[in-house]
Structure formats: structure tokens, C-alpha cells
Image (tube, rainbow, N blue to C red; front, top):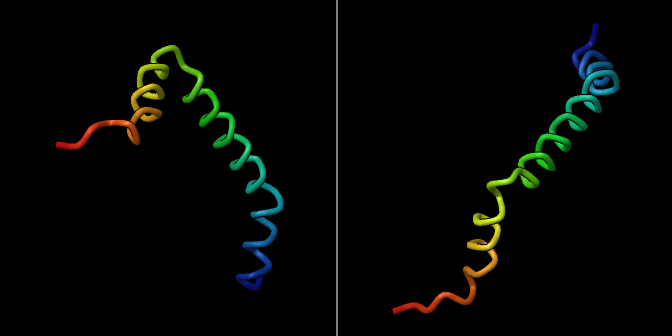
Length: 51
């Protein structure tokens, strides 16, 4: 089997599943209870005073 064909079949079958799992994982990571403080700190980075 040609390399391109094998990679294409893998991407068609498992690539989408992998990307959906990664997407759901990122969403759950961002919505976890302890994420609020990190998000607030990141949001205020441009407004921090530099000495």
C-alpha cells in the first residue's frame, strides 16, 4: 500500500475522532472550576504596569 493512501485512510477514519477528542478536552480544560483565576490573570496582562 502506498504511504499516501495509508495516511489518507487513517486520517479519514481516526483523524476526525482524534480531533473531536482534543476539542472536547480543550473545552473541558477551559471550563474546569480552577480556570477562572488563570483566565483573569491572562486577561489583565496587557494592563499590568511595567517598572
